[in-house]
Length: 207
Image 1: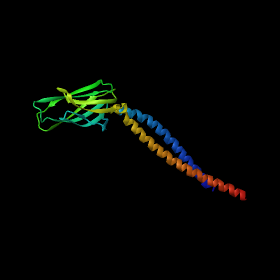
Image 2: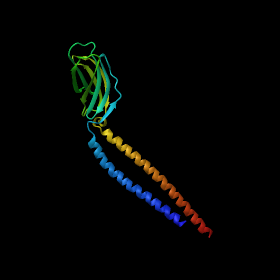
Image 3: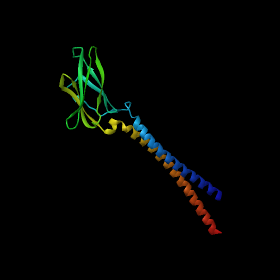
Image 4: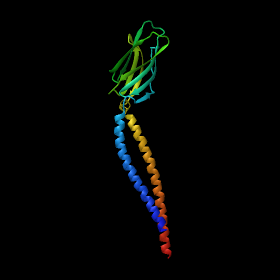
């Protein structure tokens, strides 16, 4: 009985020691990885913006996707040149903030010397302009003939910090599961020890 009790004590000590060591390692690794992840956020960061819904009178342009990248957005759109004559055309894309002020404008000029829809992609720099915005797309020569959609962005999505946050959440989830498993093991070992103590006390009383 004493030998079994010593074995349980040894196992309990090993589990607690392992938990302390892993906790220290996770804390140190977390500090280092946070800095590395933040430093590694670069132009390769991207996240699809799903909540756009363009409406307006301009029928020749269709926005296909908006990709949030570091410091701005990439807009992919299609242009139907069926009713246009000439060598090239210019499209204006601009963003207006919630107070009505224009924060950024890009002009996309390209050749229309081919049949069918023309696929285009434009980057708009929105550094420091997170919030509830509106994005407009129009022919440069007809600015009143446009399509527009809301564009809600936060600081984390613009800077790419969301990558580091999600990575940290995953690490904390894994560590929480480990703590739960160790806690359950310690509980059962402690309960077994308590049973043995009760049995020993009971035997001593009966002697």
